[in-house]
Image (cartoon, rainbow, N blue to C red; front, top):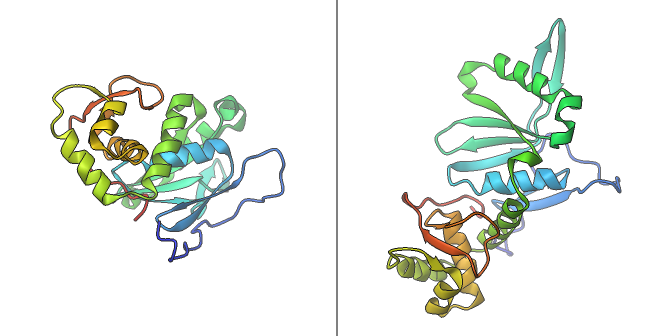
Length: 225
């Protein structure tokens, strides 16, 4: 993040009320722009979407979509509109798994998906807390944080080191070999986000995690664009 360049305003079509004491509401900075969230679950979903290399940008609370249920027209505001590098668009709703049935959100999303104009090139997706683990949340928070302020020289040095790996190696050993200290750990996490490295086993990514080279070519992510 460039601290001499203040972030732009949110693109949301509506803004969360910040008076409730029972919900987690606030904002993060993404692509030097304010992005509002209305729950911790929504924030976690945003982190995971933002870390996908194929994602170009994300807009929270996009303009409402109109759909018809029987003879009645309704409006629905999605939590996110994800725009991919290849031009695809995905409307994303975030809902606690325990509330999916009572909210009838699947019924609503089904109607919307069937009525979206094909020319829009958009799809509809539901994310719940059942889609990821607490370890996934930990890793997403850590990766998003470290990708906010990448250090090119560190990442290049770590990439050269990683190119010499033929199997799995412990992150702590990579950090020690790099001579970068804690900044080396941050760089390793970024290389995982960039898909140059992958954890050997699921779980929280820490100094004791073993990583290996990723199977496909690395791709940049757009968090700090």
